[in-house]
Length: 348
Image 1 (cartoon, helix red, strand yellow):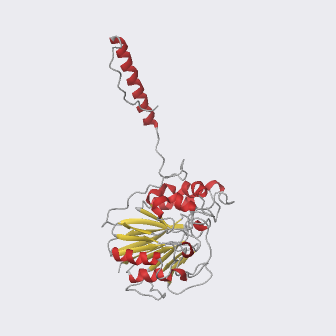
Image 2 (cartoon, helix red, strand yellow):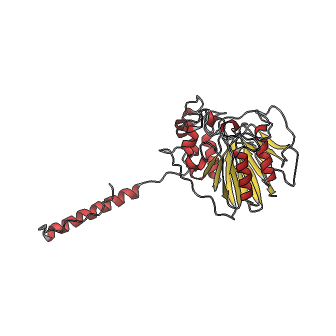
Image 3 (cartoon, one colour):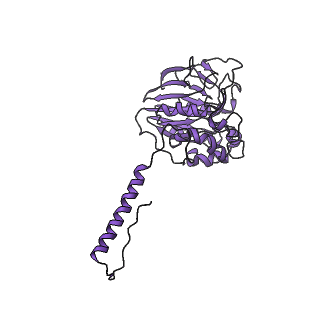
């Protein structure tokens, strides 16, 4: 029952006796009590649930106030299409469709922000697929999530499902890049689908020009950028030179960390300069985290300066962002012998 709304009676003589008036007051009191009782019986959604009763909204909680430490979680290549044979009503198969498991891992880290590294929803990222798969698992983290689009988001021209699902937080639909602060860090979401944004990813493209201006306007001690396609990788798709100019702009701007996905594996690199050479003084450390649930794919080669890698474990990357550095930990699905990786570094 809805709570009764107050009304004003007409100012005329009603001829009510004192008894009738008392009866009316009693009835009103009873309705109010029943309304409160109905509300007290309402049970909030269990925060560990993997299935929400309805699609989540596009409202995003503000990140932690500037200056403090923060914990973030990141992963890409996440949710199977709900029509996939291996989806199995969200339960998944032995080696595919583990989006529910990785969502549990992400939520268990109690993060301040969640970075989604593209190919968030397979196969063609329609709004129906987002609501039927991703939203039922990772959707509980939507209020603190910041996405970057992958190639599967653009299977449909202009990525309508992606921009519809995430709303304004994903940036302008003709751009898909934006920035924000988390704690004392500056974070930058970029669009590595270079043929889908005006001017592509060239040196003087609108996106790269905006990136240089954004870096100049935010001289934070620590900076992290994230997108989908890895600049350096030993995974299935290998190195992707399309983001060369983006990497160079980040290097010139003093960035510290890059997070990517696309290859369905985990790989960590030593800090690198734009030409892929080790650079402890100014280099950027890249993490490939394509382990979000869809499936895993084996490495077919090795590349220089790859410090850790695994293609057999679903999981998420946890980063503790401190005012002058960061700690990383790959958090795997909980099973015997699971791979993990951890360490710490300082900002430039």
